[in-house]
Length: 158
Image (cartoon, rainbow, N blue to C red; front, side, top):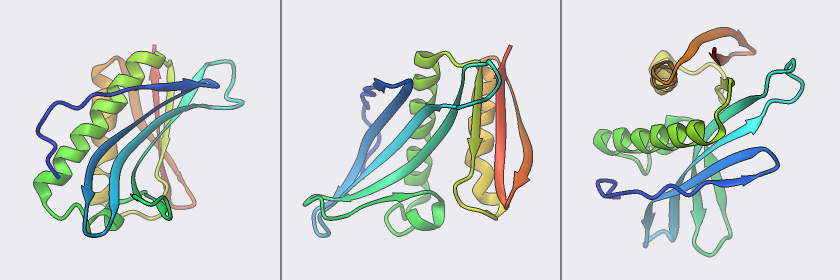
């Protein structure tokens, strides 16, 4: 995988959602394609503030379309994102996608929750980076109480 070149980010929009999926690599021997997936989906029933839930993952798909799997934490991606430099590059792609979606959707409220429960502290670093990026864009961002082992962050733009 080589993520050093320019990456074009096309946004899919519909039904209030904003989605970016970016191919980041492939494995000819295994017949697999790897993509970053990032979405802002409307928060339903959250007061009268138009808010969004932010989700992101790495999608692993067979080129024959027989298998599609979403990887929600780093333990699942270690097998194909074996190099620390490559993992940092993928995180940069994720952050770019999030920034592009935030610029497009212009939300006042963003919620983010870990998909996997009871993640170790090191696995939460990427979420801290996302919060820092959103703070730089004018959000008040912070961690809320955990729910069933899942970590939650709320970002509010005033």
